[in-house]
Length: 251
Length: 232
Image (cartoon, rainbow over all chains, first blue to last red; front, top):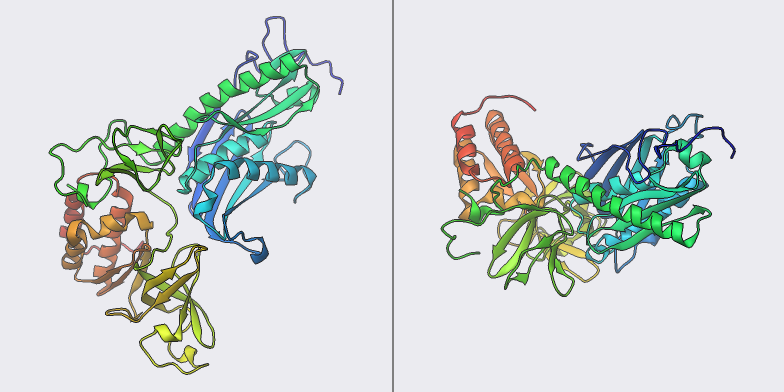
C-alpha cells in the first residue's frame, strides 16, 4: 500500500512519538469478569481486549475429548465495532487462524495431562482494535488462565515486531501495520525462553528478522513483569504481607 | 500435617505459574514441578512447606475428585438405574442404584431423587481417565433436604474447616446452623433464616480472606455482632 504518511521522522520518532524499540502504553487487569473462572482485560495502545477462561470443564462435543489430556480451545473474536469500517460479525478466516495459533501457543504451557477428557475454553473478545490484537489477546489469555487457577509451566507474553520505513520497529500500530513493510507477531514463555508463537507477514532479511525477534524478546520480558503485577494486584497482596497457606498456619 | 508450627513462620508469599521457588532440601509437592535443576510453581497460590515437601496451595481452580472425599452433589440427570451427579468438577459422576441406601427397582429412580436434589456422597473411585463413581452407602451419607447451598473454591475448604475443625466449630456454635462442608467446595447450611444469612456472610469472609492471617479473629468479630439480616 502506498501512503504519503511519514512513518518515521528525521529524529527517528514514530507517528505516536515512540522510538523504534518502544512499546505502546500497556495496562493489564486480572479478574474483571465475575462469571468467568478467570479473566483479564488488556489496554494496549488503542487496543481494548477482554479474555475469559472457563474450565477445565466437560468437553463438548464428546468426540473431541482426548482421554489423555485436556483440550485448550480458544475463540478469538472481533466486535463489529472494533475497527474503523464495521467488521462483519462472526468467525472468518482470519479469526479462525488466530484462534488456532493462540490455542496452540497456550496448549504448550498448560499442564493438559492433569485434566483428561476436559476442555479449557478461552474466549478473547476484541472490543477495540489498533493492530497487534493477536499478541494482546494471547497476553491477556495467559493472565486469564493463571487467574482461573489452571496449572501452567509459565505465563506467555506476546508482542509484535516489524519493519516500517526501512527500520525494524517494535509493537506496530494500525498505520504502521497497514503501510509498513513487515510484521512479526511473536509469543514467548519468558521463564524458559521458548517461542510459542511466530508468524511473519512481509519480507525481511535474516538480519532484520533476528533484530526484530531480539526486540520482541526483550519486550516480552517487560510484558511478563506487567502480567505478574496484574495478578498480584488481583489477589490484593501487599508487598511483604504474611499469608496463611492452610489452617495449620491460622492465627 | 506439620507437628509443631515453627516459632516464627517464614514469610509466605503469593507465587505465580512458572515462578522459580526457593527449595533447599525440599521435595516437590502439589502445584510444583521441576525442570531437573530448579522447582517452579505451576499454579497461582501460596507457598507452604509440609513434611519436608514444598506445596503450592492454589487460591482458585477446579475441584478434581479424589477417592474417599466427601462431597456435596447435585442430581443433574435421572436414568433407569442410576443418577448423574454434578460434584462441581469437570467430571460428572454416575450414582448407581447399588450405591444408595434404599432398595430401588429398575425404572423407579425418579421416586427417590430428582433433578435438582442435593446429596451428600463420597467419591468411591476415580480411574486413570478420571471416570468417577460416587456412593451414598456409608454412615451419614444422605439426601440433603431443605437448607441452602453455597459454593466456594475447593482450595479454601481447609480454611472453612480450620485446624482440627476449629473454624467450622466456631461457625456452628456462632450461628446455630447445621453446616456440612463438602471437599468440593459446596457448603450446605440449614437453620433460621437470619442465622443462615450470617453463616453465609462468615463463609464469604473466609473465602475473601482465606490467604490472610488472623482470620479466626475476624470471623469471631463478625459472629459476635450477631445476625444482622442484610440479604445479599
